[in-house]
Length: 131
View 1: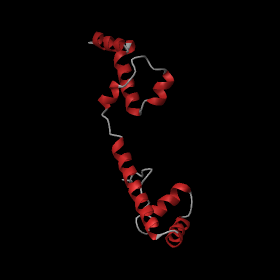
View 2: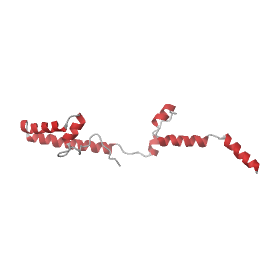
View 3: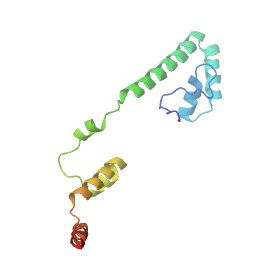
View 4: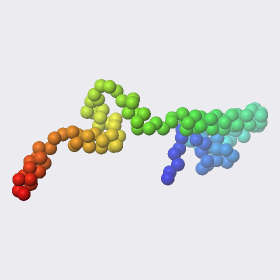
C-alpha cells in the first residue's frame, strides 16, 4: 500500500538531518543544496543561534501542520454523509459528476427494483399457462 503524502510532510528521501531544507526546496522548486548553503551562510554571517532556532522552528512548524492535516479531516460514515444531502432533487449532471460509484450503483439497483418490468411479467404468465 502506498503511503499518503501530505502537504506539510517532511521530505525524508533527501534529508540530511530532519528534512527541513529538502522540504523547503521541494515546496519552492529550489535545489535543497542552495537552502542548506543559505543556512550555513546564516550561521557565519548572522548567528548560529538564529540559524539553529530557525531550523528547529521550521521543523516543528511542518510537524504541527502535518498533524493538523492528518487529524483535521475525520472520516465520516456513509450514513452521516447521507444526512448532508440537499432536500431538493439534484440535476442529472450533478448526479453523474458528484456521486461516487457506490452511489450510482445503488441508484441503478433502486431504479431496477422500482420500475415495473412488463415483459418479464408476460413471460412468467406464459410459463404458468403452459403447465
